[in-house]
Length: 152
Image: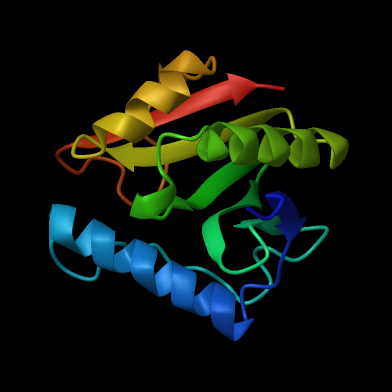
């Protein structure tokens, strides 16, 4: 088995786009529609505005996540682990990398929106020190939306 690495990536890379498409398909299964209609700008995950990371085992990408600036905070977006790689602690490692990157960039907190149909994500966030905050993002006020934050 190859060594698993978390590396910075460009959202425009075809293999990264494919992984994000897989993520959106799963969100669509859970919620309907496109999966996530949150507007994402071309430079949202480009330093100094943010960063995007992938989990790479040398053969394929197993997960991804990015952060983008939201005032003095880093907003977590596109957090995902492929089904076949779940339960191996990859999401926790990826989240730690996101937090370190955002801290180094001077962000005060990591904030995020998730939905009530993602119990495994909610469990991860709560287990790693995230607490509920007032809804803030694109889906603020929508039924089932849960917003979280963690101070860096």
